[in-house]
Structures are given as C-alpha cells and as structure tokens.
Length: 139
Image 1 (cartoon, rainbow, N blue to C red):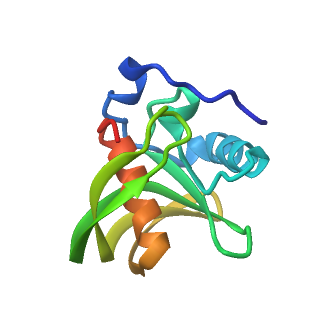
Image 2 (cartoon, rainbow, N blue to C red):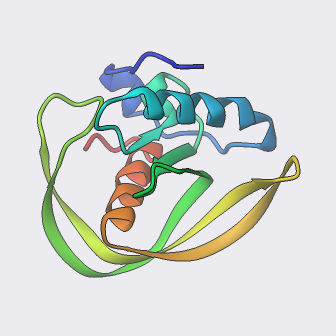
Image 3 (cartoon, helix red, strand yellow):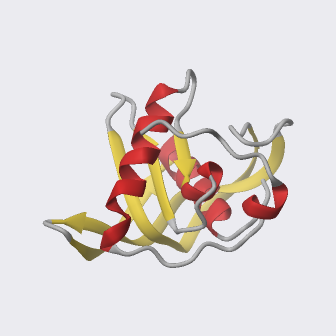
C-alpha cells in the first residue's frame, strides 16, 4: 500500500526498534511507496511513520531491495556529499563512505536470515542515508 511521507521531526528523530519477520507487510508498503515517487530511490520505515528498522532502495534497474535491522560495520574513502531527502526540505552536506560493509537481516521463506555484505558508490550512499534514518539522525 502506498503510504504518505512523514516530515515530523519527532518521529524522524526517534531511534527505530528492531524489525521482525512480521514486518514483511511494512516492507511491501515501503516498496510500493518509494516506487510511486518520482525521483525516489530509497526509504526508511520512519519516513512513513513506523519506527521499525526496515529500509528499501531501488537499484539502477528499478528493482527493490529490502534490509531489516541494517548496521554499518565500517566504511572507507570518506567524502563530503550533498544529499536530498524525501522527508527533509533542504539538501544536507554530509560525510559518506564510498565503500561500506553492512550487517542486516533479509526475509527468506518467512524468516529473517543474517547477512553481511559490501556496497560501493551510490548504493553505499543510499544505505548510509537510510541507516541514519533508522538511528534517528536527521539528515
């Protein structure tokens, strides 16, 4: 279901609770919502008003990817970038890593499975942005 974006700083600055396999419907709402937005590339659950650690991003082919409980383990090649955000009015000047390693859970056959993966470039930047949202950091 397509959900309305939330721009309330109180919700956006709340640290998200751990997600469970029962949050699969929330993940689908995130996919539906980000896919419906012109220029939308990624979305965290608190951006639709649910403070659960679930995020989604669209790859270069428009295919959605979901992470539950993402955690940044480390990053390399830090740089300053200007980022826009679907729930913030002004772009932000932030520091992002070009390459990251992330721990996260993935829903497989109704159960969350632990994953660890490296990401680079634009995908790494989007994931860092969404992890900030899960941590209640206003970008």
